Image 1 (cartoon, rainbow, N blue to C red):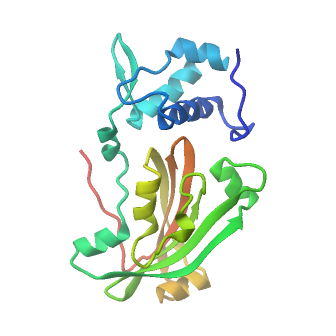
Image 2: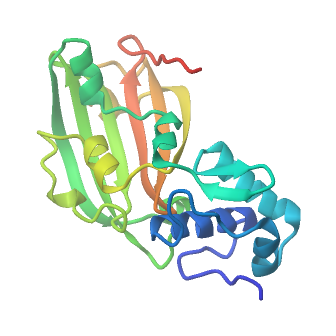
Length: 242
């Protein structure tokens, strides 16, 4: 029997992504726990009515994201949660500032519950004019603005977002507890800041910013989409991996 899209699955979602979402939702709901074997690729081929190649892509990507682990000749299993720490590491900016021995503070500019635009709804994979949570926060290091955080949040993943005190915690800290990370995609580019962003960062609009855009997933859903503006002359991205 072919798998039919649910109300939360847009009709134009690629089949490999539907299979990934199906498996992620099953893990999030507890249907498959750590160490449990998931359905075989052949079973998924039959269930979704797709090619083996399509199923293999979905399973391969989840294995690469360390949500699943393959055992030769045995099957594919739900990976232990400790592997999630080796995904893209997402730190709170407050922790980064404090680690440098500096003082962090934040200023909330906007916190609202608002109807998603068509583009934002598509990015979240939602339909029927959904409501999203939206926050705009300026982060400071030793009194100097270093980031404007423009974040959209899925209420299904973080229902208490609007009641948080973002002067004492950051959206990142709350979301990491409320919507444990299953995966993330991101991009970084250099852009000139629009006037409102430049004013919040206390820079000239002619100065370049490093702009990080990131989408995070939790429980088989897109949990958050955030755009973070950093003044290029005050900020750099660095890291390492093994």
